[in-house]
Image (cartoon, rainbow, N blue to C red; front, side, top):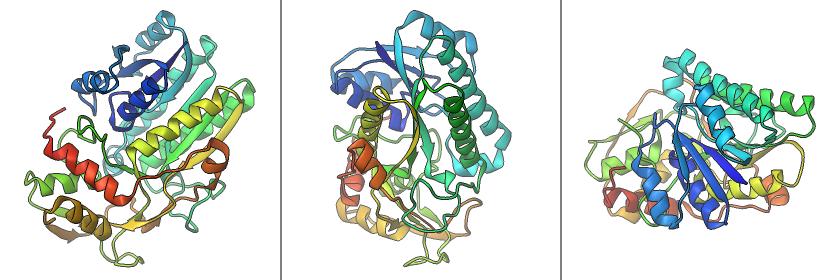
Length: 334
């Protein structure tokens, strides 16, 4: 019995694959490399010292996806695959709705056909929109401020409806806050195609001299220093949250949402300061206007994941910055 990991060559998916293999799970990985690179698959094998099946498949290819289920004894799915850039989603919303939602519908139809009714879904704190209060509990009002978040919220609703229609389904909706950091080996980390959309890869490229400066999008928010405040979580901590969620869905039924964060908020300027401390590099930045869809403050109420999944993040903001810098200076072009 294997765990199917969609988007397993991606940033969070690759770290989760390592922890799954280390925990003794058999995995089957699928990725189309739209925002990841083939070398990551070999890095996962190198770090874990274990082998696994890999399919280069787009989840929109229904025939190819069904072939994976036909050829393998799949017991559960961890579903990472999808477009994920907030700003890009504002510019090309139709691409985001088509890719993220249609691919999930295809996946769920095939899972149902083959009797695989256990899923860990990669959702996002963007489903809270501009939150009413912080820390944000799972039972907060749900809304979105951008198409990326809307796709996550729509998929959550689809999965809830699926669970109501058939009580044999067991689904964990994992609402990530802001993953950063890299594997301690320095072999895998966040290395997106082109100019990074996320804060830490961008800071890292500025520190390494690959980019001249960091754009800070807005310094007039109602926060401690005017820059946006987010709940940053180390990707290794986050990946362990998936292992705990998998253990939960394998032994229960129903659909539950869980926040995966640290419960602490750090501003953009605080993250820059922490990165400068661990790297010894000066991070040059310029302030520009706010991005469409961005909000001022967002950090998690983490009690539910602690109580029900027996999971809690342990790494500090300095750990996150140090591991990101370590990945950068290793100059691994994966």
